Image (cartoon, rainbow, N blue to C red; front, side, top):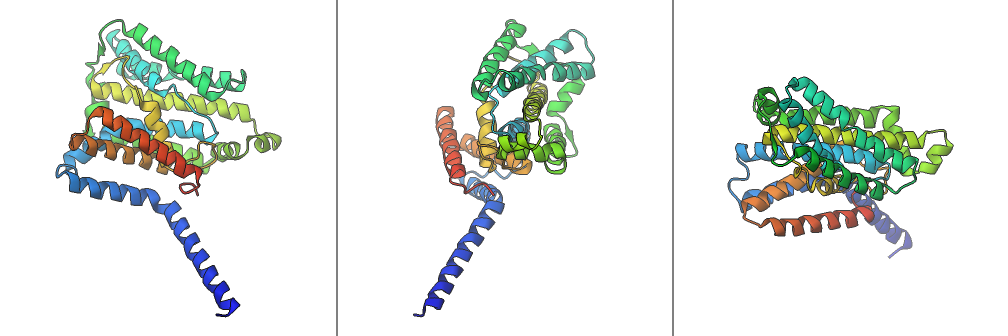
Length: 327
C-alpha cells in the first residue's frame, strides 16, 4: 500500500474522530436528556405523563436557578457552598416579614436585598482576605444556616399570603410559575454572559485571571460581583421554594450546593473556570432532576439515591477533566 494512501486513511480517521468529538461536545446534553427520558419511560409508565413532567420541571426549577448562580462563580474558577443555607434563611425571612404584616412585594424585596449580604461577605473574604473560596463559603454556609435556625425559633414559619403562594404553586396556562420564573432568570443570565462585556470578562478571568488583570480588568471586583449574583439568585430560589412549600424552615436547602455544582459540571463547565454556558447548566439541572424522579418512581431508597448522585458527580468531573464535556 502506498504511503500517500496510508496517510489519506489516517487523515480520514482523524477527521472522523474530530468530527465525532465536535458533534458530541455540541449535542451531548440533548443526547443525554433523550437517553434519560427513553430509559425512564421504559422503566415506569407514569414517567411521561403530563402531571409528572410538569412536577419534575417545577420541582427542579429552583435547583436550576441556584445552578445558574453557581455557574457565574465556577466560571471564574471559584465555588459557593453557601447557596443551600441562603435558601433556608431566605424562606424564613420571607415568612417572617409576611407574619409581621409586610406587603408581599416588600417582603420579597427586603428578603432579596438582605440575602445579597452573604455574597458580599464571601466576595470580600476571597478578594481582600485572600481566603480560598472553599473555606470562605464553607464558613458562610455554617453562619447563614445558624442564623436561619435562630430566626426560625422553634417550628417553621407558615406562609398564608395567596399572592406569594401563587408564585410557588400557581400556573399560567399550563406552565408552573417556578418554571416561568426560571425562564426569566435564564434569559437574563444568558444575555449577561453572552452579550455583555461583563460576561466576556468573566470567561476571560476564568481562562486566565493573571492575563485579565494585566490587560486592565478589575479581577477582584468581578469576583466580588459573581458571589453577590450567586447569593441573589439563591435567595430568589429560596423565595420560590418557600412559596411552593408554604412555609419557611431552617432545614430547607440542604444538598442544593452539591446539586448545583453537579448541574454545572454535567452542563460541561470546567471547575477551573472559563467554559460552559447558561443553557447547558439548566439542561444539566433537569438531567439530574429527571434521574432523581425515575429513581423515586421505581422505589430506590433515598440513601441509595445519594450514592447514585455521588457516582454521577464523580463521573461528570472525571469526564470534564478529560475534556469530553468542554468545547
